[in-house]
Length: 267
Image (cartoon, rainbow, N blue to C red; front, side, top):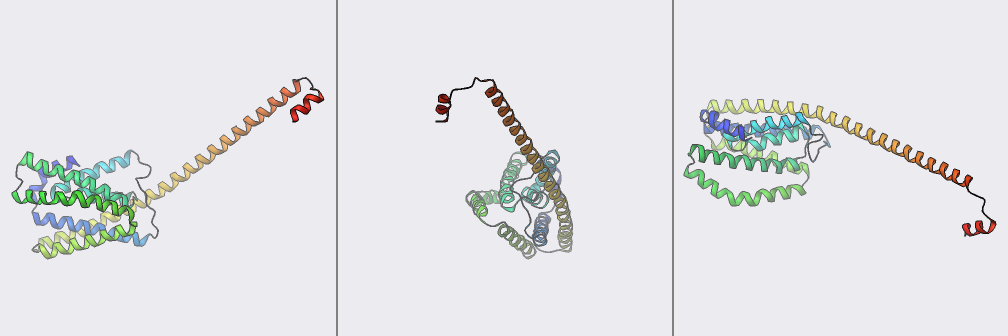
């Protein structure tokens, strides 16, 4: 993510107008929310996980690529790291929104702080208005971000998803109301919305394949555990039989005891 931020600030940000960045963010966010809505409606009782199941090398590579792309969007829109990881976690790896939301908030906070730092130290072009926004946001974010994560952990997953739908719709409509519209901006918004929706549909398709692999791996684990239980049970039974044979051999080699001793043993 840090490398994506640096690359975006040094080579990409200066070529994109502020209005274009606003529409790019709200359009992609709206496309994601719509894809998540379709997924939750299409798959009733959709299975989710509290963490990425069966993490391996290629999944780590996916997160590295997602981090770079998210950092690139962060350098442009100031909040790309959150949506990039949130979409991959929920649509591709089936992680619950209750886990993905606070995870994305932490990633978003770290990338935004680094972006502000790089702007200040390397470029030195932080305006007074940006400083004011930064100072105002501190006391709000440090309180409401943990509070939102805490409350979200007690809410149903679909309730968290519904909040995402509402925020995406409000942001999308608000951009059209606030930002002066031009044909290029409208075309950009429509194009990014359609392309983003198709991309998120592709993530959903890949996520379905991954879920099938997860189910298969879980069955393999169950079979291994079952075989392990059988083997340990057989070994335990064999040990018991061996102990019984040894005990019988010991009894056969012992001298006969008297009736009095036998009564004592029975007592």
